[in-house]
Length: 230
Image (cartoon, rainbow, N blue to C red; front, side, top):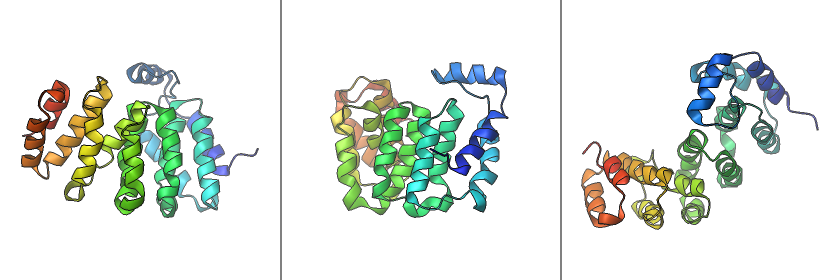
């Protein structure tokens, strides 16, 4: 199968960039089994910008776009290729495909990415906007994910409304948090506190009352995060 030109262009650009010494440090910091090229986040953004904006490399349809994302992601030999796949999902040229039909792709990225550097951006910057625009269709999906066996899908559900502020669905927020209150995972406890802390910027009294209501069921980590700026 022939790769899309944008996939080849991205792989070639990544292969010729980076710093081997930095790559070792990045891999250790991220506890990643997959190696790094040693490209910083600003360098990666600058490298990808002209490639993703090049009309000659634009993907011709939804299937081609999703195929390119999956190829970069599933065929990655270095972690930056997965970061590039995430950048490709969010590029303005493909905004018209940010709808419920894309959730299965994002579910795949969350489950196979299975670490905060992948999951958090996909949850808040990709899945969140789809939820905001298609509440009736997407809310049941988020509710299912909040009780899924996969902990990263549960984290995704909890933090899916991070950017919503006054548009936060409080019933959904509680419905994603409550099935996970007794979970001992650091990543879920952190997510619960983070979600509450973000909403505290909009309604601190609601967050204080909710923390009090949950009482001892709320872990110390979640409580500290929730009340951090109150």
